[in-house]
Image (cartoon, rainbow, N blue to C red; front, side):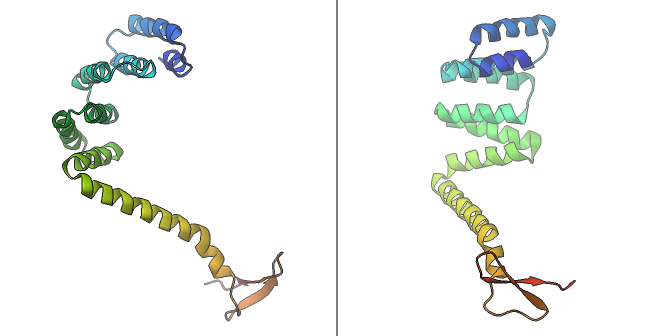
Length: 170
């Protein structure tokens, strides 16, 4: 299995096919063969319909949230919005919480309310950058004061600015 994955990642598809056949021979009932077939087909740039067929087979045998969500994304890209909504509903029903459930809900919302989904994404990005800014800038703003607060001692920094360090145990 791992050798097949490595061969796919290195784009050595002849070796990947050989390892895939060896894997099927050693574990004929293992459903991971569908994942290997999907990854090989995707890496080779196969048509979206072929990718959908592989994942449909897999999801019908073994409902795993990651691959069910991947199938939902393929349906969305192929313009099969009804099937995409159905598989998103199944993901929510089967798993009820988690990373891929959230992603499936977001995809479903993107289909049903594209404007609302876009606004939420923008707000999410703005919130992320606001948190990033606060984490990067805010601590430095606390250190550089124009006058020392009580119970602080004065120290010189390397740039000759005054900084204050608390020696309080509070």
